[in-house]
Length: 360
Image (cartoon, rainbow, N blue to C red; front, top):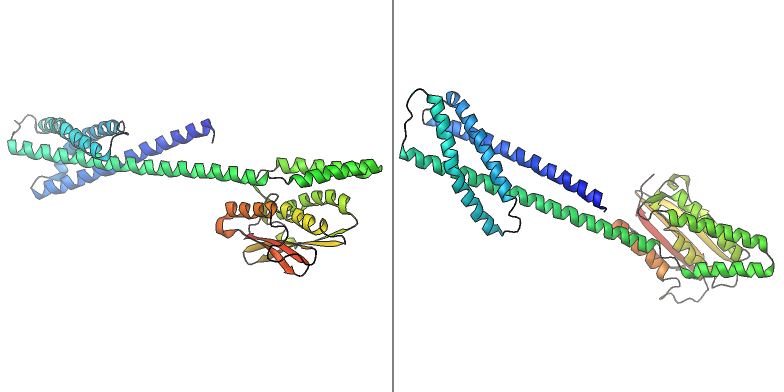
């Protein structure tokens, strides 16, 4: 996440916080207005006549509450107990100010009549004002904590996303050096044999394949048809090496060619089939790629011949490439991405991925 993006997120979060604070203040003082109107009505005062005075009073009180909020925002490093003490102290300090404002509005409302001052009313007024501001301060702190929790969750999600992106890139960019070395050796061999045309085709295929793979974003999925087209570039390279011994077939219905798959997810499966099938067998080897739709799932498999007598308890090909596929599926889809591999018959090996069906 870049600095500009972080700053923009912070501005957006600040705007959301102050909007939430304004909404909380509006709801709080509307509730106070309604409750006091009902209470004044019970004791005999006309709530309609007293409404303008209360509106003026609570408008001034709301300004005091936002002053309290501004002070509380500066106490980010204080403990919860310390903040509670500060809330009480601020409410205690704001109560007489609020009472004086209310008393001044009361004098203005009854003018030119003489105001009646009563110590009992003073005690009730101060207590009620302090309770109002302490209640507001507690609600405001709860709002602050809720936004802090949301901010921590957002940052944690961002960190997890960055970690996942780094993991996916690391997995995607794990290129089997044997493939590159073998290809370069094959090109050198073709040149020594005088097969310049075949060597040139191999170099062009290798260049196209590497350029395409390096340009792909590991976090973006691609249609299965594009993934198959990319693997055909890879197969062109391998056909130059094993043209006399490798047979390859693709059975992918049109209905699933638009299904989304992680980019380069098939390359390790095909490379594994070539390495442990064609590379380990003297005769002709068949490699078959199939894709099927099962309800809301997509299954893609690669089968290949392998030397008869391979230990089934430790089947050939369980190495970096297939582990890479399994880890990418787990990182991308969690428990929804499945990978399986192993012998399916004597002399026959199968690797398959099973993932949610998502159409482009």
